[in-house]
Image (cartoon, helix red, strand yellow):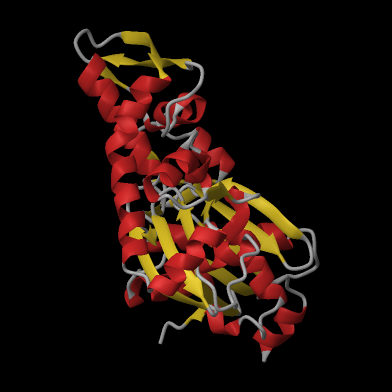
Length: 344
């Protein structure tokens, strides 16, 4: 009863709980939070020192007793307590301007497709412990398809590829359900690791994850570019142990990423091959939609189109497609209840 009363003073929210970033949509207001999924913890006291943007600044720069952790690994919760603290921080942040003393919102959360029942329940429990009154789960490719305004309830095939930080979800959707889906661990984080490995193997240079991500954003590509791009690669020389800086080109970084890109394309082809022929025929007309941060890699759409012979386009608001989808579900819970995932 008390929960219901507190619920009247709470704002319903949609959350894209990502490995790299967490986005929060508030019913009636749109997206109001977009922060890194990073939490800084004092290991001596167990106290949470910073969450989101402030915590990300500390990555790789903390003393021994302070760790900046990402509580989600490859799209699933790896540290339950820290995830709970992070969710509570975001829920409280949404409600701090209102008069709600104990926020009890209804929450829709995007989860990777093909995660286990235990992992689904972990997300649900973390959200409830963080203050949610009711928790609804939706598979991220479904939420991304809704957020990209795809006609998911029609009897036509819609192929969506959501490339996040920890996972890539590939799904063919028709009549409001997922017909064929694949989830793989090749995503933004893996591409960063590819660049770190390349720097170590080719130049005996040790670089951090943030430096690798900056290089990927600056010159990363999946398809040859019209003009050469270059950037600085700075790190520690593994031979001398001293700082070192070199210039790398887009062709080198493309070579570093090539294996992961090929695995991703093979998974897309396998998904298409296992779909009914009528839906595959629809794909030639409707094309493939890319969403998520990884979809912004230069030339990825061209590369997938060349390999699959199917038109490919990047969603208009690719970074926010999943959270926009959770928001649309929130606004139309009764009409879209069939796309929600059961944890029973």
